[in-house]
Image 1 (tube, rainbow, N blue to C red):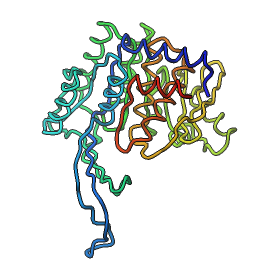
Image 2: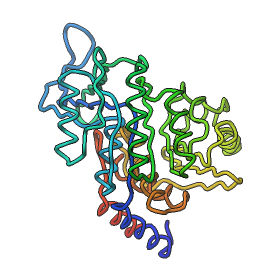
Image 3: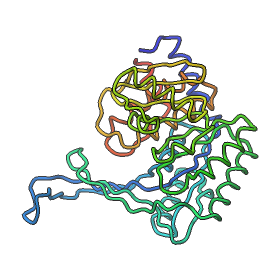
Image 4: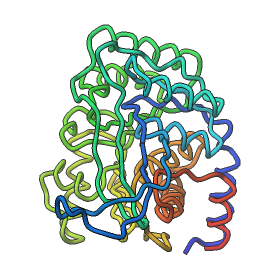
Amino acid sequence: MIAKTGSKRLLQYIDRFPKARILVVGDMMLDHYIWGNVSRISPEAPVPVVHVTKETVLLGAAANVVNNVHALGGSVRVCGVIGHDDAGRQLSHMLRAKGIPADGLIVESGRPTTIKTRVIAHSQQVVRFDRETKDGIDRDTHRRIYDAVKQHVDDGLDAIILSDYSKGVVTKELVRDIVKLTSKRDLIVSVDPKVNHFGIYSGVTILTPNTKEASLGSKIEIESEKSLLKAGTALLKRLKCKAVLITRGEQGMSLFERGGRITHIPTVAREVFDVTGAGDTVISTLTLAMAAGAPMVDAARLSNVAAGIVVAVVGTATVNPEELKKRIMNM
């Protein structure tokens, strides 16, 4: 539950979202869904036969973060890498169709645009297959990304979201250069992390690992409140960041702030059908709220409400300001 005074304050932050300027840097991809029904098992192998009824393609990973910020009313720009292929052109077209500038998408020849294909039957994921490369970006692409980030910072920016899906865009060198660039201007740098990259996020503002990622990143198995406190505190110390927000599924979220403040936020999700993209919604709402002037605790509460909305939808989803306000007022 959120007290009336707290609800009023959260609603005011949402009204400020359109003034916030966000740059999303990271791994762009497409989420391809094949929808169908299953009524029998294949005679060729013990696998279900899916009768396909429709296909949809949505913005995924960092592109879904961009879409989330846009849906929430924030001013968003994008910086990432696509391939010289149909998928890259489709991703660029999808952003432009929403009114989001796609000039920050850098084409790297020989590198495919990442596509995740999920087969969904009766609201359940049957299988997923990925078309991608995890090779790091080349030096020229790194330079072009950094130059683009610097230009956006110089033009005026409130926050940068690093959306790391470990597909080669978010590198140690890029994080180091962005942290150095933004530290002089007190800009927010938030990270949706990947476990194998935990060592490169030193100096960012806030990190949003899930329980598994926090366990692996801190090398402390989270299985109780005591171990949770140890893991969150260890991550803060190791990464020298201002805060760590651990997303804990049905147990909500736990925010660890520099100075020792710890806040546990219970989940508000009413139904959970699909957690795909929930992390994108969390980092988008959290960063947008902070850029709109919300303290970290209130920003985390807003992101918790937003995540509770999208997990009730099958497939990659976003939330808009009206939905967010309605849910808050009904709590």
